[in-house]
Length: 407
Image (cartoon, rainbow, N blue to C red; front, side):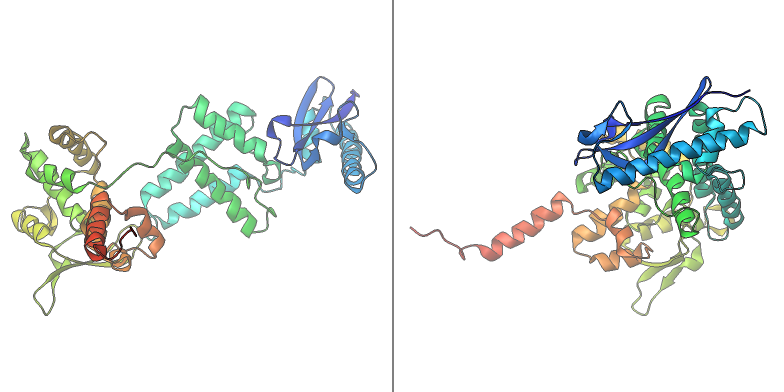
């Protein structure tokens, strides 16, 4: 049965740019069904004729845009006729799909994401971590749920992606799913990686989310201050497991090793150099990057304290990461540290308080932590207030009596 087909255009004023232009949106109506789509272009609000759904005037800008709108309107009617010849009850969504080139053979986001994850899983245990694979699977699950919730579809072509899509996805995660900014950032970042891969493979020509800027979580201090470190070292605890947790955490604070790298340590990783100094020489499980760390007095004491106590020839007696973090929360409470304390804080503390604040160069810290470049180290290494105070005290001594105000 033949149905009425109407194509109109309007401006999305709530997404106006600073220059006064707004995204042009098409509204396709077929019978009692309707669908909206982005024209992937902008038009000046001051020149827009709302009643006519096009730009006023005969400028080059107006002629080019109006020609594009007319062409879209003609194409929509032509595609509807083609579909109506094959089936009854053609919907606006079906015409939109054909209009925007969303053929079944075209690469789609979910299908591409799934293929990526299948390949990624094959590399787990070789040069990829199970936890990272879990994050990609989690991001894919959220995407599928969103498509079903918002559009009642199981997949979407790359060509249909635009700012409206990503903003709706952000709203869904932030408001409807009540996810925190850091969680949203991780989910969206992994989806946007699919966009970057698709661009590299020539599936799409540009990033449809270029103007998207996700809300960044408020930066939190992840390293321990000197005073907090002293509290943990000297405060009496209430259980043997808490003392074990404290010792393993302090080992991380004074070596910069991550949890998994500590679990992997054995006697063969302890090497003595010609000067009699002991070193940890290992390879980071996460990145496969070698790291060499000279052992300070405190971690040597911890090694001796737990020597031959760990199973399977390991160097340290490690609890599960979950149990360590639970114990650290209780330790923080006992010590009067009023912020969240997790095991990974030890690695941040080593970079900021133990090394950088004591004058160790950034390049040296980067090598000891097993980073591939300094950009990773800068995430960890922060200049503490204690370091600033020490540096300014030295500066004050150097400049005393050198600068005087003229009388």
